[in-house]
Length: 482
Ligand code: NAD
Image 1 (cartoon, rainbow, N blue to C red):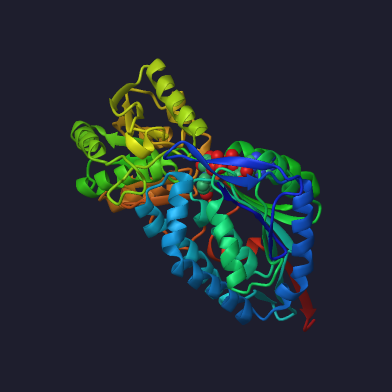
Image 2 (tube, rainbow, N blue to C red):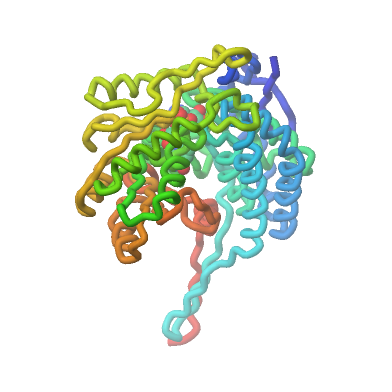
C-alpha cells in the first residue's frame, strides 16, 4: 500500500487524527494506496504555514517568483513518465492521454503563469485633465484551491499556478478520489526549492477537509472546480463571509452539426467531444444534435467509429477508453443508461459495463454508449452524466436546435460545425454558453476566459482573468488640475 501524506510547511505528514482513507485503482478494482483523512486541525496547520510564508513570497520580485514556478514546470516535464503512470493508475485514464495531455499541460500551467506574471500590468485612467487614477493589484493572502478527479493534476495546477504567480500562498485540497499526482507534485515543489508554506496540500474528504478549508476565516478566496452541487454548498458557506469565489461546475454541452459541415471533421470532433477521458471532462459534448438531411449517414458513421474505439487496460499503449474513476461513478453512469431505457431511449451502440480479463477483470469499465430517440426534455438530455454516454437528436431548424441546446440549467461549452460563416457567428452569439468552439472542440489558448454561465459557473479562469481573481484592486486617484 502506498502512503500518501499531507504537505504542510514544506514537510510531509499524516493527518492529525491518524486516520486514513483507502484508495482503489479503478482499472483493477483493488485498493493500492491510503490517504490522510484530514480535518480542521490539518487545515488549521496548513493555513498557519501559508500565513507565515505569505510576507516573503508576496514581496519576492516578480522575476524571482516566475523563476521558481519555471523550475517547477521543468521538473514536472522531467518527471512526465512517472507522473503520467501515477495519473493513469489513480484515475483509470489511458496512460497515453496522461502522457500527451494531462502532464504536459500541468507543466505548461506553471510555465504560462510564470510568463504571465512578468507581463501583468495595472490600469491607469486619466480623468479629463483633472485626475489620474492608477490601480494597484495586491495578492489576497492565503487562498484555497479545491479540485476534482477528472483531470487531477491538470486542474489542480490550473488553480495553483495563477494563485502563486499573483503572490498568494495556497492551501490546496485535491480530490480524495485521485490524490496521487498532487502528492508527487509536493515532492517536486520541495525539489524546486519553493519556500516551505507557499504551497500546502491537505488530503481528505470534501465534507471534512474541504469544508474546513472553505469555512476557515483566514482563507481569503476559494477557487473551486467540481460539481454544481458542491459549488452551491461553497457559495452558501462563503457568501456571509464575503470571500471571493470562483466556481467552475458541471456541464451538459451540445455538439451542433449542420448539414453543410465538413463531414469528416465534424465526425472526428463529435467522437472526441463525446468520449475523451471516457466522457469525464466538463467540456465533453454529450448531446449531439444533427441536422436532418445528414442524420442517418452521420449516425451510422458515428456508431462505426464508436465501435472502433479500443477499450482496455489503461496502461496499454493503443487503448482509447480506460476505466471510469470509481465503482460509485460507474454505477451512477450505468443507472443513467437504465433511466434512458425507461424513458424510451434506444441504445444504438454500447450500453453495458465492459468486462475485461486478466489484471483488469474487476475494473470499472463502461462501453462507449450512444442513445437516440429521447426528447431534449428527458432526464438523459438534461442531467450531467459525466461518463461515456452521448445522445443523438435530429433537428430541422436553427431556431429549434438553439432552443434545445439552451434548454438545460448548464452553460459551459458548445461546439458548432458548419461551413456557413454567417450561421457560425449567429449561432455562437445565441448559445447560452461560456465557451463556443466553431469547427473544433477543446482547442485551448490559456489566455482566453474559461468558465460557464447559468449553473455551470461563477467567474472565469485563464490568463489575466485568473490573475485578476487572485488579486485585489485598489484605485488611487490623484487630482492634477481643476
Ligand atoms: P465534487 O464536487 O464531488 O468534488 C470536487 C472537489 O470538491 C473535491 O476535491 C471534493 O473533495 C471537494 N468537496 C466536496 N464536497 C465539499 C464540501 N462540502 N466543501 C468543500 N469541498 C468539497 O466533484 P467531482 O465529482 O470531483 O468532479 C466532477 C464534477 O466536476 C462534474 O460535475 C464536472 O462537470 C465538474 N468539473 C467542472 C469543470 C469546469 O471547469 N467547469 C472541470 C472539471 C470538472
